[in-house]
Image 1 (cartoon, rainbow, N blue to C red):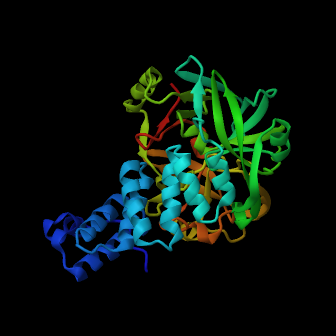
Image 2: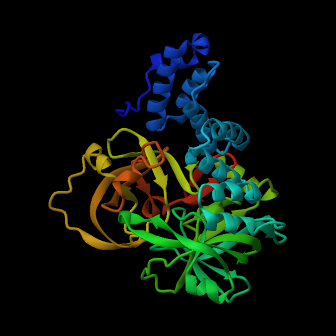
Image 3: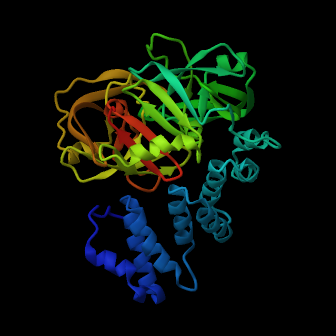
Length: 432
């Protein structure tokens, strides 16, 4: 199906809202579903949801539409609604793995590991199921420590932020911060030295440049970050890229851990700030969020960590961009482009030299280029370095909707980037 223009016409919007569509006959319902599919594919989730809701008002709703409604609710962390639609989709499509996979994600993101584990087992992900089943009787990501807010100093900010932590009462080690990583990741040799548990055979995961690498599922008893100790934590065990960081890096703090706090990567002041959710520690954040100098940007999350928000590259039409702070190609730039975005943004790669960078799955050949203007919501940066060649073509629509590229370290460097997974808003605050 051809991709729809990202500008939604008033006529379509009125049609989606019209009460007449609620009793649409079958052909009109099919038309609504087609509209919803086009809108979803272009990243207009709210408009797509209106079309799908009108379509399922029919007495015999399309099973794929029920699934898509569950997927949209999950993208926005609307878990009660997502569960209802996805449970129904599993019954309507008993032989399809996708509704089961999405329902398992829904439970996983709520730390309902006991409900997620049997679903993962049912779809053949035995190691993931064993990992989650091992939390029986435990509270995943349980936070202790008297403070409402933990401040963890960056040991270095460039090419990527690094903090100190303790794993299972280990000596202090260095960890990268990377929202492009799903869970807390540890190097296998280090994980073994601190007694991390490992489950089953590895899964092959695709990284930059389409390179695949094995990843094991595991658990640790605790991680100490500043004033907080977080216990009963799932981990991924894999060999990470050996970046020339000047320090031995034994792991990566990914989105799943940051997700359990209102987390701020404060680049100008060089610290990671972890605020307990629904605590007095949010008072300062609420003040910043209301500041006219702060850019508040809605975001959505697909899978375990793919945060997407509306952005713009040069004079191209707006599109969704993946918020991945840990561009592992040595932090050389602020943007990674898909081929279609190169054309849309008027970027000429002819004659530009390529080089071999370091990606999550190993070396990858990329071509650097200059981005005149890169925007995320109302925040803009100029004259940033971008790279082409690090993204597999299939990733552009890998989640069913278009992602034009990755927005990364160099873009966020002037700001304090706050991630609020309850409100599904990110905040970009300039230095105070």
